[in-house]
Amino acid sequence: MPVPGDAPVFLLGTGCQKGGTAWLHGYLSSSAETDLGFMKEYHVWDRLDLAEDRPGLKRMVKRGREALDALAEGGRGGDVRALRQAAFMLEPESYFDYFASLVGPGRARLTGDLTPAYGGLGERRLAFVRDGVEARGLQMRVLMSLRDPVERIWSAVRMMQMRQPSRYPGGSADWVRKLYADEQVESRTRYDRTLAAARAVLPDDRVHVVLYETLFEPASLEALTAGLGLAPIEPDTETRPNETPRTAETLPDELVAQVAQHYRDVYDHVDRDHPHLDVRRRWASARFL
Image (cartoon, rainbow, N blue to C red; front, side):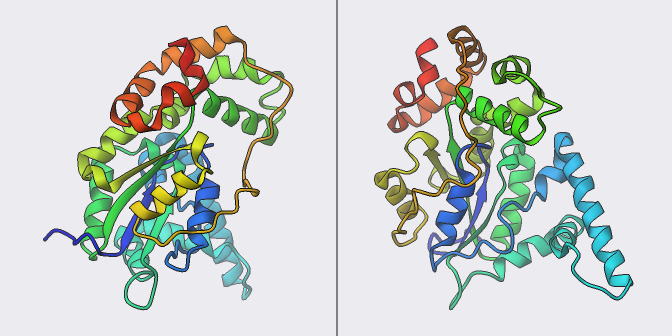
C-alpha cells in the first residue's frame, strides 16, 4: 500500500562529502519538527556494501568490543554508539524500528540518516532501505547537496592533508592530480550515478537536490524546508562545521580543466535534470567544458 504524502519523513542523506552536510544536519536538527537521533552519520549501509568503507567497519567493531570489555569489568563509559551501529548492521529491521520510533503523533515529523558515503549505494540497497522505511508507515526521501566537482575534490584533499600530514605531504594540487580519478574519490563525486539510483527507486518529488554554492541563501533554505514539509527554520550561517580551511595555494587551470573534463557527465546530468541550479554559472570549473 502506498505511503501517503503527509506521512512522517525518513530522510536519507547521500552526500556529497564536503558539501555542507554537517551544517545541514545542524540546521535541520534545530527544528522542533525534526529528530535525527543519536548520530549525524550512522554509516550502516556503506560499511555493509562498500569496500572502501570496510576500515570504518573495523574501527566500529573495535570500539564496540572495548565497550563490551568495559562492561564485563563492571565499568561503563565505552562507546555505546558503536554497539548500536553494530546492532543495526546485524539486524537491519532494528534500524528501521529505531527511526520509526522517533516520529509520529506528539513526536517529530522528520527523522533521518545523513551519511555522505551513502552516495556510493546502488539501486538495490536504496530499494531495500525504502521498503524497510515504508513498511513502518514512513515516506522515504533522499537529500543530496552538490558541489563543484573540482572544489569538492580539492576540499577533500586538503582535509586529508590536515588530518594525516605525514601520509599526504606536499602541495594539495599534486594530490588532486593523483587522486581525482581514484575509485573512492569517484564514488563521492559521481553525482549523476547517485541521483540516477535514487530516482530509480523514488519519485522525483522525493529526491531533494540543493547546491552547496547557494546552500546558505534564504531562498534555497526556504525551498528545502517547504519541500520537506517543515516550517521555516532560522539558519545559523556564521557557523560552518567541518569546513576545510583554504590555503594560499591555487589549482592551475590545466588541472582544473583536466578534472572537470573527467567528470563531464556529472555537469551534463545536473545541468539537464536541474537547470534551475544553473551549475554552468555557479560551478567555476564548468568554464573549461
